[in-house]
Length: 459
Image 1 (cartoon, rainbow, N blue to C red):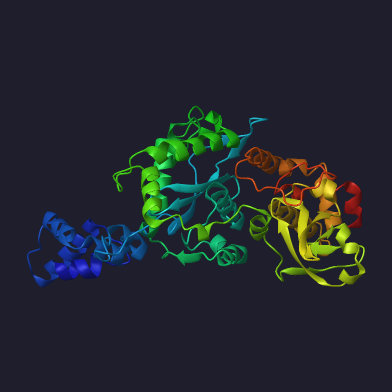
Image 2 (cartoon, helix red, strand yellow):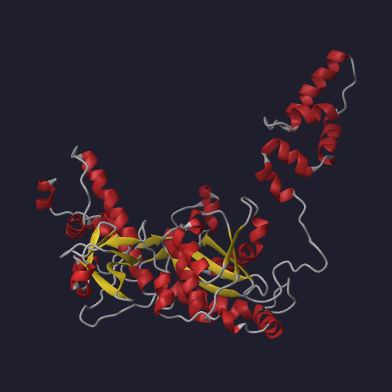
């Protein structure tokens, strides 16, 4: 019976116990042996190692939940560091709630929450809430928020294997401020239990008590029009961010944590008292830090063309500093704001100068994601019309934004970005702000869908 269980039941075929018992009984009859009952066969399967059995039937990911945990490495080894800001975790999750536009009441979908949690005290250091899926922008923004709140960055950041954590901009920022990045093993959630626990607590204690939560969608057959979360959604991104910030920084922060025996705020304060303030780790929230959180081009620089400026992401940017004849045809270090395609920054004459796009009136406030969507939309339309592949420049993108027929394709993203723009606490501060150019912040997907009819004739 043990041989039959090991070879037939514990296999990749994932036979049921009854089917494996039938095959075992047939073998016994062929050999003239009295077969054990089905109940005995089931009890024998149950006595075997659950981890080994699941590993053989479903693989290592399914068996991970049955794998014994490492309770302690050593009696003197701290599990999550021995002071605040020594080890922190960054992770993302999609909240279980549908949000609406605060202006039109249009359903915008579920938001993504990015958290930075201190492992020693379990205290939340920073958060970022957005409709966009996880990317390097979410990582940059949550680190900005951390420096804005605490004037420092963690010494070690624990992340998962997501591509957003492998971004050159993210790793450059960590290297600049002497932070160590550690990637936890894939498909092993216990290594990120600090963040995973807080995600679960936030959903159960806060989000699941709000109108429009998506708990019922776990069983799709029970969803009717009367209980559909999209019809019951009433919260906007700005309102949710305000209340979520209040819950995480005021309510959860003062509640007793079962793993600590005290609140995260108390553990954080005692940890700082015991480990010291370490003033050498202070990071001022100034222009230099904000520029370090901005991405650059693939080469890190751009060539200055006379009369046009520097070209970043197929868009030309100009500053009056470029009039210096000594800078012509030189390669200049550049950075751009992923949340405002109308602005960029160039390092020349020993300082960072603000550059404006050649189509600033249209691209101002438009984000990098919008420009990307615009590029994809134009390429798709060219394919459908059988036209040749054209180089995408700022004129085409600007004309694309002004097209009337693009309004329908961009309306949802514009509403989402408008809601995100209402959150002022985590938005980056403007660098090199000039009063000569008024700011009208748009979004990251708006540069994506607009070409007038006369432009189509040129295609």
